[in-house]
Amino acid sequence: MKVIEKQITTENEFVNAVFHDLTIRQQQIILEFSDLSITQLEQLIKLVKQFDATYEVSNNILTCIIQMSAIKVFKGRIDNVEVQDQIDVIINQHAVIWQAGRFKLNVSQTPLIYGILNVTPDSFYDGGAYFDEASAFKQVEKMVADGANVIEVGGQTTRPGGFVEVDPKEEISRIAPSIKMIQEKFPQIVIAVDTYKFDVMKAVVDLGVDIINDVNAFTDDVRKVKLMKNSNVGLLTMHSSRDVEYQDLTEEMTKFFEQNLTDLTEAGIDVERIALDQGIGYAKVADGYQDYAMMRNIDQLNYLERPIMVAISRKGFGAKLFDLAKEDRLSVTLIAESYMYLHGGRILRVHDVKETVQLVKMLDTINTAFWQR
Image 1 (cartoon, rainbow, N blue to C red):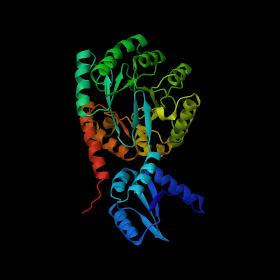
Image 2 (image 1 turned 120 degrees about the horizontal axis):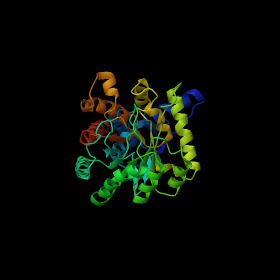
Image 3 (image 1 turned 45 degrees about the horizontal axis):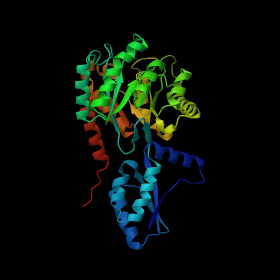
Image 4 (image 1 turned 30 degrees about the vertical axis):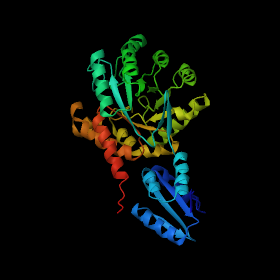
């Protein structure tokens, strides 16, 4: 018995395009099993039925569609080491890797819980709460204990509705103590910094951070690209449309990321170092209908094969739809995050780490629950 990944090929180009799009957006894989004995074929049919999989048998070849989220469980129930190894090769070919500083992160295997630490007086949700070093340490300690993989330190808000720009020296002075504290006390934690300023980026690269999150996508200042090229830092590149209204949201967003990835990679930055953020909350109309459309169309970016961030924690859609104060938006945040996680968002940037860890564990448990006596 052997297995390969089956590529869709029919004489109808439209059918090919439809199936290709569906498998990518729905995170599915088509497997073809051949060289089967009668017993092996019978066992395999029983197995794919347990996985609620669509399948067909033709000329003693079994073809089936399996969810990528279930592929490891599926592999583990095949009693054939060679076939298990072949499936491992297929899994590795589809792995989405984020090379971020000291860390090589396989987000296909382990989603990132990305805790937010705002050391600012004016961030929209927690401004001022962790402005002093003692409070910042307690919050980092709590987020790590709750299950955060990444801590992102921010020294200036970019919240919608206007914000006061901070001098780069002031921003550096705000964030440097927390960066050094995390490095010393929590060396296993990935350290990210949220900044759009070159001088701040240069300073934190010198400090040894692992990720830089730029709301301007690194392309507004040629010095940024040169700095990133000569570092090993992971890039989180965000799409923003605060200055221009959308005409066709999905098309404009996909073209933006295609061009952004091209610009960065042609400048010498390995594509494995780049992750994407749709920029929910950064449309021209804050908390407008575009935000919900971006939540829905996140799977339209799966074809880019890059990690996609879900960055909607406590944002204003909770007020827009339900008139909720920021303190009361956890439930609607978790609901929206669940949808986006199931459709491809593998980096969850959150204020509420413990609840998000529960969300991921619950959804992963459901997604891999296939009954077998």
